[in-house]
Image 1 (spheres, rainbow, N blue to C red):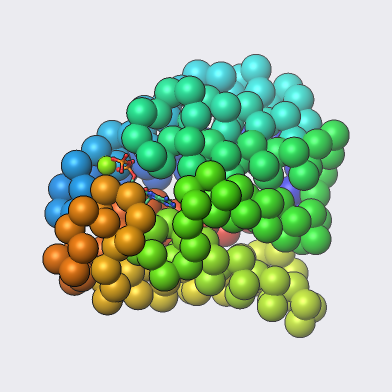
Image 2 (image 1 turned 90 degrees about the horizontal axis):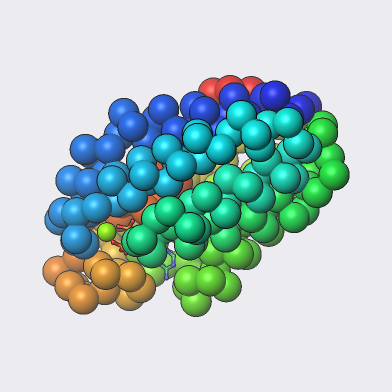
Length: 207
Ligand code: ADP
Ligand code: MG
């Protein structure tokens, strides 16, 4: 079970992780983008942290929705609107809930991934955050269907996202800035897939 306090703890953990990984994410983005992914994630989650004391007085839905809105309105890069949409969509699904179980989490994850696809006009296999998020979502659903608890299912989701991040090294980007490099993006790890993995890892660690 995740309650509002736990969800706020998860958001704080994600914000702290982005700070830790700022230089690494920026370095990955230097290779195939414009070298700002770590900066963007830190700027976005710093804005979320400023608003968190107010957001955590609400339910999980409004907490996640507010998180998404802060990301959308404070990050200039592509990742801000994409992650922002993901959190806002998850928030819509969890509207009015102050405690959630695995099935709610699955529905929120589904909405979040769907939101990224719609907003990004993107899909799996294009060397984006979706190459971490889609396999994670699939693995999570399979684990839940097989009777796993939330934490166990998330561990499998994290493992799938790790494999997805590795996979991004083998393919050429067809979406986002890295697509300007075409085949030359092969061999490089996607920064957004990497930050998605970090987010999933922090959620799992907090449970
Ligand atoms: P920008 O590319 O505007 O500089 P960031 O560097 O913060 O923004 O984020 C780059 C990441 O965003 C990429 O590594 C990729 O994972 C993700 N991304 C870019 N475009 C898309 C898209 N259309 N769909 C999904 N993810 C995308
Ligand atoms: Mg960038």
